[in-house]
Image 1: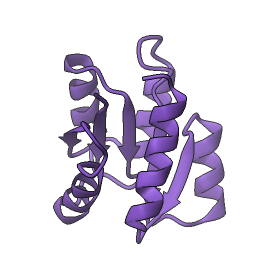
Image 2: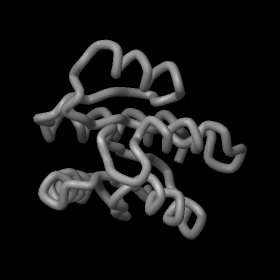
Image 3: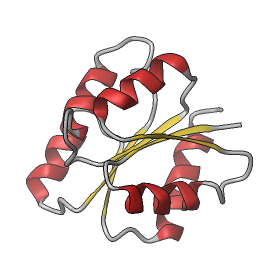
Length: 125
């Protein structure tokens, strides 16, 4: 039963992504409003996949990715960046610091679900 952490500061976007994730069978969605909140959730729950925005207050998505990748406990969790930052350099930076994939907004729900299933299936969970 996969636990999916959705890290997004916009309540509307967070709800949209969470709703899409609930279509993945047996998945449990855990929501976080920013990177700091996400780190708290990571330490209190077993997370199988992270969906993360880049632009967030307090701690942005890129900082979160680098902290997750720097922590031996969490470093293997797949991370998919979901963001309006469609700029090529942002995508390259996200991938360079350890994000597994990058999905520009507005997101296509089917594409997101397919991508998440690929990572969940591929991680042997």
